[in-house]
Length: 418
Image 1 (cartoon, rainbow, N blue to C red):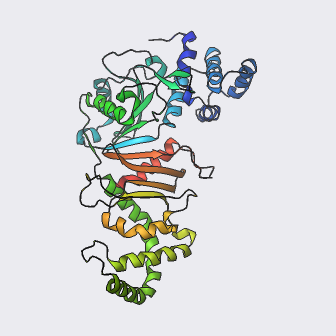
Image 2 (image 1 turned 135 degrees about the vertical axis):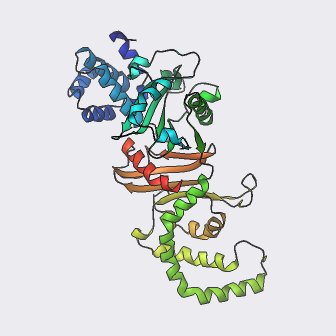
């Protein structure tokens, strides 16, 4: 269905959360289109001084379409890139389809047809295709292939009905709400990527809550024929412990080597404490371990920066025997200065609990990868792995902005621990 030119502006305005001048300009340069964007933007701004930035950008893009500086295909590429670089709250599942994982390129067209992917792979062309039998419309996709087979398929879903999002306490805007479903054949993962739902005006759980949206998206995916078979990462807390051990074990060893020089004194002091206070003998963590970690907390203050690691936040519990038991103590350490938790005595003092539990509820990791610094929150949510790449942070580093490339870097880094 062809959209008339007069409709483009209204359609573009539905994507107002993604129309930010710096981002749009960057993506246009990336695809080598519309070199006059800044010039036209300034002209339109002069005549619309009270309009917000997203409106000026939409009008600037409309001008580009009108004078043939931009095609609808260009707009599609721009929107997909902008959305892709904004959806970094990701829920991961293990992809279990062996036949899909080995799908060769010559079989993909039939699969795309079976899954009802649009023939016209353009977001604006599919935006108004009302589908009353589903809560989602497939508006586009991107595929990544090698010489033999498809490696990844990213499907862009939009809510069939636009959502209303608060701009302020009194005003709201109609907004297209996107979800990216990535079928990651190469890494055997299923990704569901969304934005936050905090400002949505709606009482339905499937629209206004993250858990409702995830469930609704999975139900939509389950309708695909042939089926996409997947499973939850229900041991993600154990995976986070393995990641923590990988990042901090060597750092702890540096401290332990220094601790060994005090072993004789610690053994003697532990014996004196037990003789005087007679603590329970059936405790999972003995007196010597507690005293040793108190000394470690002091030693940690002497570690050099290159010994301290990449974890800046952690949360773990003490209900080791029964995860369903709601009566537990919870330990949270979050360094606001983005220093590793191994510099904080709270970590060392509570380390015996963590090593006994061997499960972590939440980790915040700051990692320097191939495409720059990634700051990520990792959490066990909705019974699976939740990875949130932070787009805004108090961490003072110009290279911290989230991108699709950084997301891929981090998933590659995390995947061996899943």
